[in-house]
Figure (cartoon, rainbow, N blue to C red):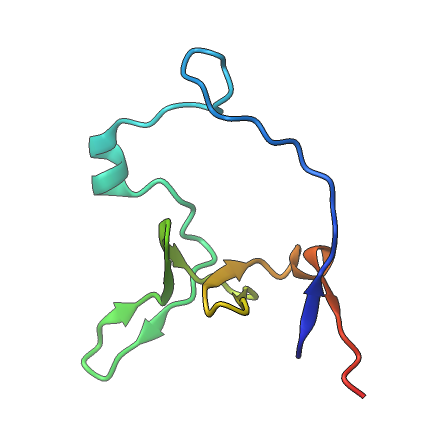
Length: 98
């Protein structure tokens, strides 16, 4: 289905250390060894050899793992990203193709 991005107002601020703009900090070693994202709803695929793998989208910011109910958004320039099912139609309005 083709969709058009719906307009919405955002607040844009350049990040500055020491201004309390972040929600918290995680040790780099913890991010690397334990991961910093919630894994509860990630899609899990069992391969023929028994290995369980989780799919992801690779984009300019890195990898985004795909969760149950997520949508893959492909933009006109070919860039792709993941949008959760709860938010996708708040952000994108379906286009009538008739």
